[in-house]
Length: 398
Image (cartoon, rainbow, N blue to C red; front, side, top):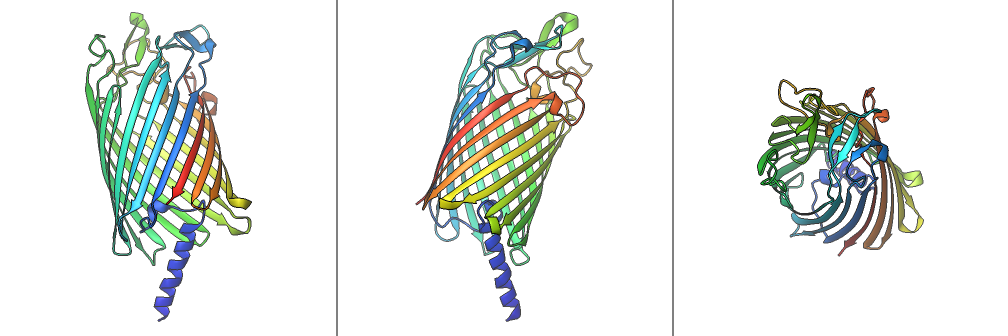
């Protein structure tokens, strides 16, 4: 009788901790939906124009991306639920092309014509309870752009033990991508078609320490193979006074470790989220991400969430703004995403709940700079991004 009461008490504590607003880790619980949920979000992403002092040619206009996301999820009986996610995006703007040496530092050459592209993405998932301690999830999806088509599939599972206070998660995934670059059949130095694939595996462990505190850790490995270069980017090589194609290794192994803390403060109806992420790959890139969020419940069904994120990374071993001569291994890239830099991001989210209907608005401002990096950067890439993101969303439980 005592053991039964203890098990019930611990299960109650676990349920209470996972149900706290702003604290929930729904993917880490052996539960399925009991009600149909419909969600919609519209987002407007705007990159700041490139500084004209860092421009050698092309447009200063960067990317604008408008996104529409729709999700519908519903129970199928007591032990199964299904979900479908649809995304439609439109993108326009100019893309960084290559970098030239300048009198005051490197200067960026942008693509001459504005890019107009669309992306359509569909994802589906099925969750199945196995007993009262385990859950199995099957996921699959497809994504299509003007020059790109990708398929993906995954299998995830979780198991609860220690009276539901500890949850072990794990999963594997696979994706296959086909690329047919625009003008690939016209430009002699651009591939006309290419492919790559990726295999991902992860394992995670979460622990409910108290009705107010949950901690979680995870480790993942992602291995990419195939064409990993960017067909739309070039690299300036000074000894030939000309550009060469972006060339990257045909394999990339990425490791990611994450730690998360969720702590609820019942006296002020708030929750603190603290996340740390470490990334490392065999291209010599290592990054650190620190993310802190404060979820504050307010009277009348309102919730305000300010968040602050810091990011810093080192550079790939084959990266440089430009090259004086060819590398012995033939690799070269001046892509700013492979350069050393740091970034700060501030987010503000406001939510309002009316019974089964919730609305939210979110704003994010992001700025990247070599000055923000943890390690000293000798030469900053001139095309580092700053952007603003505004999102509006609806959540409806039927």
